[in-house]
Length: 346
Ligand SMILES: NCc1[nH]cc(CCC(=O)O)c1CC(=O)O
Image 1: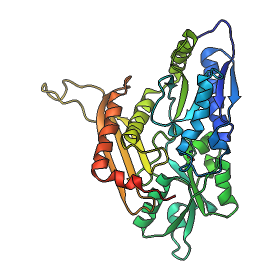
Image 2 (image 1 turned 45 degrees about the vertical axis):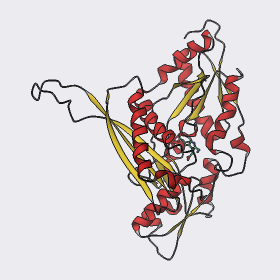
Image 3 (image 1 turned 180 degrees about the horizontal axis):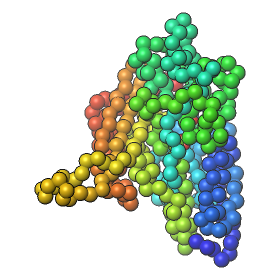
Image 4 (image 1 turned 30 degrees about the vertical axis):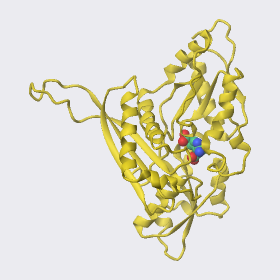
């Protein structure tokens, strides 16, 4: 979209180091794509000013609503969100024009003396104190400790990334758990002692992915912007996060619920079966693998399941991932997931 007016595009962003970093990167990509200047417009959200726990102020949606208000008011042209902070219900008047290639979705451990979780918990006389405000992380860290026959204390904290790492730097906590993607974006991933395997700790649905949101084409200009930004979309990332968010939505869990999910796409080694012998009917098939977990925050009970579907390579539509998420949610609910999510122990 080479707009003859060359009016700057206005990108609404929160002021945190993480938000500024990810908005800055998207702004650069949009400048390259459109040849137009992109202006960052800082928006303060309730989630940035409140000291309350996220679970008490209605979950991570609080970070998003001020940006959406600014979009609807026409104060900005587009916004960049961490996808994991976006509520699963999409307002009709707005659209996710692009979900770019995902960063590392894993959680990372930042610990004193760069110890790993196994090292940190090895001394039975010293119970490791690990900070996280996320019931999902608490549940899986506690389950991991239990599986190792060790004891930890999870300490509810919140604040921006620098604040949370500060608890370890000041010696107030032994470790904190943060999203690797956030650390990478603000240039601090080297400080991670350990990247937590999804076999042990599943990330939040959508973790590591960004969403570029704009008005859903009310005007010709809006429609043109949606079409342009779509060039930044990565269909594989969109398929994966669609499955994860579909699972979350079908569990009817809020964004602060103890739910982890991770989908990945891989070329299938399996070929579509055919009657014409081994060579006939060969077809490129992509496998979408979805894992989900729900647990009590004390880690005593986890419901963890996975499932796989075959999808056409680089799917343009998201009905297969949607369906896969709903199916896995139904299986998890049948195994008692709802009872575990009801628990509120922060
Ligand atoms: N809940 C806050 C939040 N939202 C997105 C990220 C990290 C970046 C990402 O997942 O894309 C973080 C920080 C964290 O969980 O450590």
